[in-house]
Image 1 (tube, rainbow, N blue to C red):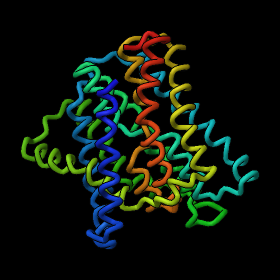
Image 2 (cartoon, one colour):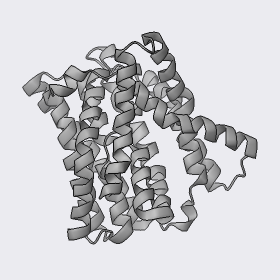
Image 3 (tube, rainbow, N blue to C red):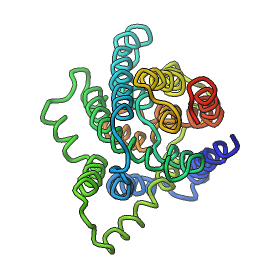
Image 4 (spheres, rainbow, N blue to C red):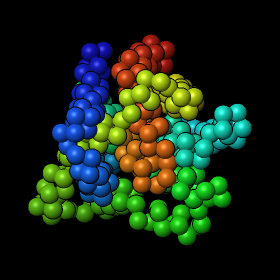
Length: 317
């Protein structure tokens, strides 16, 4: 599937560009901090909101599609959390490292998925991926914030207080971007055209800027010398997640285009904005950068394999 390779290659190329800009000091270190803040507070909320505002959610039946996505997220989250005592006991994994393992296993890069689906399946697939984003983004955002707050290295071993967890969720701009888009879409609110255009323009910067910021934070040595936690994140994301999604989708009787779109969602690497969250909330940002880089490289080959298996053995497209 050449189009799949073409969809993933530019992503990795931009990450490498960010790494090169940082390594050469062409862009000074303090400037990357500003870019990270812009991505977290402005660019990502805008692209999440505008994507969901434009999505034609009413044209898609919920049913098994929704249940499959929800069941996958819940079961995958539980399976990953069950690893915490095991990783801590066997490898001495820190709280911050585990929060990064959780993020890199459960998050998915919706914009890589969107690019692949639009190239492979057109506008009909685009509507399905928008629905998947509407279902999965709020749930994963809340659960990942909870896990990050609970396992933050900044809080020591006792974990944060409940008020801090609640505050972290309430003020998170990514969650507000998702909620804004969903509410405006479901209520069929006509957004003032100049405001929508402004949000669109800001949102377009999200993917490229966040990829550059991720590249700037990469540790090449860490990526080339995988840790055990990195390996857990790699296997959990690119092998376990597609398997869990396939199991639930088949259980609910999904096939064809819907099955293939769900498998794309499950097989893409982890979301890049998780790196920014790890950095802001006491996670292991270096581990996140290394894991997401390795996932992106491996997914360049694993995504076509997953889609081939879906088409060959599970009536996917």
